[in-house]
Image (cartoon, rainbow, N blue to C red; front, side):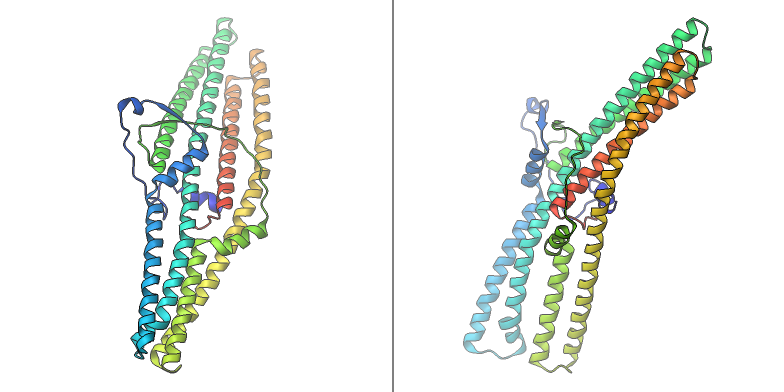
Length: 368
């Protein structure tokens, strides 16, 4: 689950795409409102408020201006036929590098947009998962209440000892504490979402949409082809290799292949090409791992869905058995715990699958 592990750290780490500033709410009345929000609206807000998007836009303009300036200098030198090393460098090589850097800035801008989308979707799904886990905790408390009620009834008719009542009360208290923890976690995930979206941290967001598993098909070769064009680390490695090769050819042609600087530039080009090959292999490996993780999550979901159904049925039967005095309170509580664990595992699987889908859709594999 390579991508999931990386995405799991997104909200806690300052990775390349995070750069948000909170937008102050105008009035106290606005601050108290509940904002219903879909995942599409969350992505739109993040794209509007993300500082890194603005930085990428500025970088594009800067590289375009640098290319225009390099072309002007090149034309000027060509007109008076400058022949020194620096003049030939400015005439021939620098415009090519500036043009390549402009193209790189445009491609990396698109990568930045996709990365921001992943951040927003990840934070939104985190909130949905926290909401789901809150419901799981509430259901667990309901079962604990039922267990205490049944135990008290059995105690009153003499079929249960006082120790069982105390155990049921302790279990109820523990389950209530777990519910409080789930409530606090939900609030924390809301704060994290607000931070990612660049809105006031006290804004109450009510996420719209179901926390569900919707299977989507991907073709591995299409994912690989797209990654070869859009993956950020590969874009940078390709540009480094191209510039290194151009630099070597320029120095070699201006002087001779045996010239000291030409030999150094040649090895720089060789190293850049090797780094490009390594980066390409890393990208291919990561895309394959992500694709296989998606397929594994699909199979895991089917298993976990059945496991939840089975755990509920096992709890129902154990509860009936306990009412008849054929099972112990410990067995009933274990059956309840099994339900909670199965539901939590299913919730985690749904979250992981949705994040994997988002990463594959947006061609984001190199998050750190």
